[in-house]
Image (cartoon, one colour):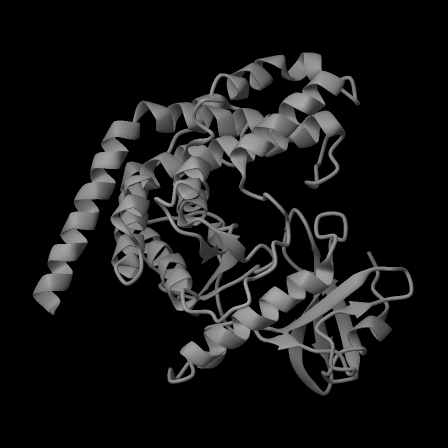
Length: 371
């Protein structure tokens, strides 16, 4: 799509735009690289108003979080690469509303850095786990008030499942017959989806500030591609449970097949990558995690994978309103792939739990020795 250069010129940045081109392959927002003749590159995004009905809340969260992170890393030589920087409009606002009712924002471009769609090595997995663990730790003391819930009940899995079953019953697009096996798969796990929200309700696990979309490509690595420096895509940073981030790290980082893989024989997860993420995350989490939180981490990989499959399936039944699709059956294909990964994780759940607890114990011993 063509973007009016006047939109970019609404922001407090160079004025002479030479080129605006699409950037990335995100499911939700539209992202563009803006080149200027008289200054550095910037990143322009159109916020999906359907997904985020209160863009000003999204940007309020992002401004608070990025300013907090910038203060925490200000002592580092590469601090300018360690956090996103929001570019405000010339009127001092964090978001621009155009005459078509579309919301826009701008960031400084992080350069030069690398991003990846798939983990390659356990060492890389370790750094990914550590990075998101450090991200949670740095935000653990973010001052009040509480962040906005930019998507209410985003990771409330019981309500996600209830929504799926409601939509399946209504069947607005007459797609239920093609998805009945997947609907049954999700419904059979109804007894498990309550576990984390009930533990929180009982006060066993605390609310945290979480990223809620811990895909590998939401990390920017250093120029050599060895170590992640900056966490991206902060739209869904809001109050949550640490398990949402850890579980989604495993879902996206350890899967042996694409999120929408058609050949379910290829769908599994890499145990070595799981171990690497676990080690990095728990080492970083020593500063703030509780033992009860750690006990639920292995299960969270199952829950988050199931939840994402439920979301894909619900969107399929509703007519593909949320996720971008490339063909009519795309969301159903995604759901099938996620549910197959759930099966594989369930089969290994006890071993994964043991690995998490052993790693937690070992990280504590290392901390004691270092101290």
